[in-house]
Structures are given as structure tokens and as C-alpha cells.
Image (cartoon, rainbow, N blue to C red; front, side):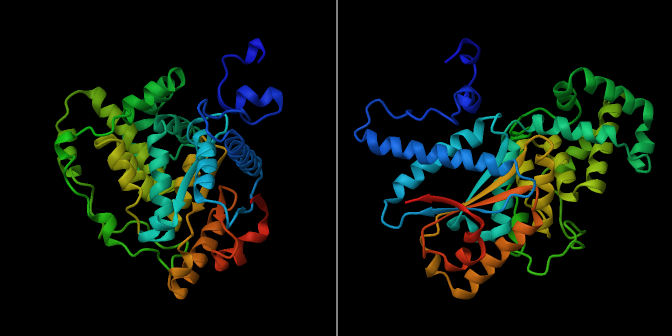
Length: 363
């Protein structure tokens, strides 16, 4: 390593050498170093390909052929190596979600939404809010009632605060990175996500995400009462700016994300991640979550794995799952890429739709 790369980490550390990562990183006590080196090679190859695809405007699905006669452990280890970089390396700059077949019990789209929302929420969510708030400030909507209430002077004061210290402003006006602000409510069960159909077959661009039948998150009523009694003009100013950002989000991005931001302020990260799932239009909400993420990340990547039991599923259900994945692809075109890890012949319906888009051979 050269002196100017000694303090770098992740892909940035090895980029000057023309590498994606350390090709010799294996356990010191490895009992099978040759095999471990092959796993590292496949892991790095996968990460490199995902990064390359993520730079395309509208990347096609990436198909990974898993060797049918190779133990699953080796594929899991190779994927885990790539995940380590995807999950933590800001130079990779991709928000990913791993969606496995057994997690699709609540529907393909809802499962992807749930896992992606959790990733978005718990990976320094305040750093995702910074570019989003910046976009809100750069394109004001003066017609919103909340804008009329807070007024341009208070919004200008917030903008000046935000310009000086974006993270501190986000923390003050929207909330800090606490998992639960109301621990006394942590045992309250939110049954709302269980009340929706798995995947909405006839969902269209006009399908509403939220209507009057959807109630608020547990504890929201109590929080509203407390906010009403908070003294001091400064608290009122902060609440006014927050109301404007939330109404702006509801109008220009997503009703679900707007409610999630409110819940983030009221309850914290755990309930916010839950709130993203409370939607009657999961494809629309998934697309909105991806657009929110793209303010910070270059691309969203949805990884689909664990199809060993695919042929044991009823044929009609398999066709519906494949169809839902195809609809997801076009709904997210340009914002997200899909990656499939499938052994040849394991999932013929998926092979027919996605295998021809190119990929890697992990045999």
C-alpha cells in the first residue's frame, strides 16, 4: 500500500491497485486455503459486477448460476463476503436487501419492502435525510397549508441552520437516531401490517397507499397530545418546519414515507421501519422508498436467493411470484437492480424471465 492509501478502507483501499478487495483475505487458521481463496474470488467477482451494473442508468437483472453439485455453504460464504461491503462500505454506495424465498410469506413485494425499509432505517438514516431535506428546501411548495402556517422567514431560518450543520439540523427538527423514544410503548404490538393482502394483484399508479381505514401507529395519539402542550415559540417553530417537510413528502413523494417520518420523530427508528410496511400499494411504496434512498445512494440492489424449495411450491403460486418479480423490475427500472442466485433447473419460471439478462457462473 502507498502512504496515501494506508488510512483508506473497503473498495477505496484497493482501487489504486486495480482490485475490488483483498484477494488473499482468508482465515489464518484455514484448513482449506485453496477453497477459501476460491470463495474470496467469487465474492469479489460478485461485488465487482454489482458495482459495475449499478453505474448503468437502467441495469438489467443480474443472474448468478449456482453450481448444482457444490455445497450451499460455499455460495453462502461468497455472498456473505460481498454483503459485508454492500452493508457498510460508503464507497460502494449501494443500498441492498437480501430477500430469500422463505421470507416471502407476506408476498414478494411486501417482503422486499420490509427488508429494504429496515436497511434504509438502520444505516445512518440521518445521512439519508440530509440530501432529501436539501431537495425539499431547493424546491419549495408555497401552496401547501403547512407552508402558509410556518411562513418563509422561519423556513429561511431553518435553511440557514441546515446549511451550517445539516446533521444537527436534521436531529433537531426531525429526530435523533434513537431506536425507541418511548420505551414504555415498546411492548405495544402493531397489528396493522398483518391486515393487508400479501401482494395487490390489481395495483396501479392510482392505487392509494393509505386511506381512512388505516389507523395510526401505537402511541401516536399520546405523542400528539404532548406536542400540543409543549411551551415556547422555538418548539412551535420546529414543529412548523417539521409539519411542512412531512406534508411536502406526502404531496411529492409518498403518504407512507410522510407518516414514517412522523413516526420517526415520535417513536424512533424501530417503529419507523415498521411504518414503511403499512401500505395498500406495496409496489408504489417500494418505488418511493427506492427514490428516497437514491438521494444518498447510487443505486438500490435487491438480491433474491434460497430457491432450493421452489419446485415444491404450487405451480400457480410460482407463476404469481415470477409475475410479481417482473412487475417489480419494471416499477423500479432505473432506481434498483435485481440479482438472482439460482442453480440451473431449480426455478424454471424465473430462468425464463430473468436468466437471459446476463450474469456470472458460480460453478
